[in-house]
Amino acid sequence: MKIGELACAARCSTETIRFYEKAGLLPEPERSGGNYRQYGPQHLERLRFIRNCRGLDMAHDEIRALLGMIDHPARDCGAINHLLDEHIAHVQVRLRELQDLRRHLVGLREQCGSEQAVDACGIVQGLNRMETAEGPVHNTHIG
Image 1 (cartoon, helix red, strand yellow):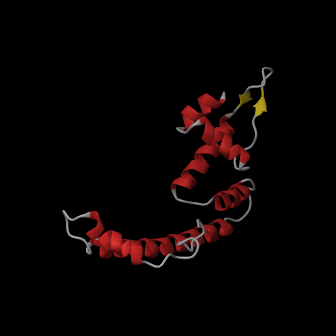
Image 2: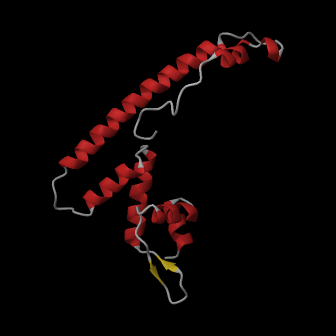
Image 3: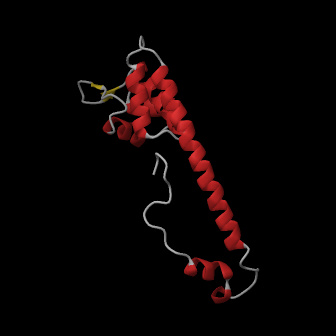
């Protein structure tokens, strides 16, 4: 199948497919005599796997590790369990970060009544007074 057909079957864009190829997550397909990419069922299966992992917010390195493990189907799946346990821990950290973010936003929102001039807005004033954080706010695997 051609790239457009693969994109349709996997419910993604052709740019997504090319991105995963460049990232080394999806193997390069064979080329036809006219130099068109020719994808097989194994590409569709792998692409669906990658997209499902991304849907679970897994980072490319995690997906790459999983793909490396499934490429050796006779091996023990303990490493897969460990990877998923680590991902669950990252999700827990992110949930706490999001709860902190929500509390902060609610606190900002409570600083302002409605129908005032922008220069009197407690939200704007609060944002101006806040200390700017260094670097990324997140300390998780997805940065």
